[in-house]
Length: 167
Image 1 (cartoon, rainbow, N blue to C red):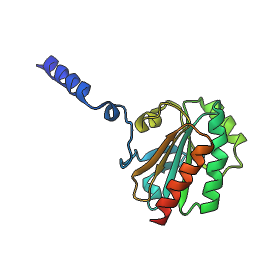
Image 2: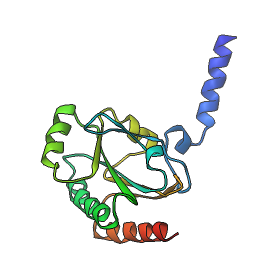
Image 3: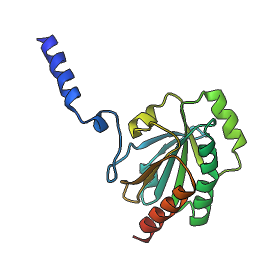
């Protein structure tokens, strides 16, 4: 009987859609709440940012486009205001030592930085490449995501933000 239950469970898991089994998010989905701990060891959550647009960027120090994107996100947050937009930059799968070093180098940025050393948060979001940016609307639903970064990304991000903030 127990082997039958295990077999049935495995069969059910194999029939689940791939995106559900591995956490890939689609527009309109509710993303995972937990975004990591900040440098003061406080939990950062979407729930604590209700009513704001939350921009989440998964990044790493070795990723040049990631490092290029962070000051742009900082400028967006500064221009619009932290009372309307909160940027959370999640360092993805780097050692604690490397993360602390790069966080110090980026200390002039007022972004909220968290660390996903094992990639668990990224797995829940369905991150497969970086930079991977998510925008969560004021209602807590995913309104945009983008993998990679370039000049064309900025226009897309601004258009999504303008639309969400004017609604």
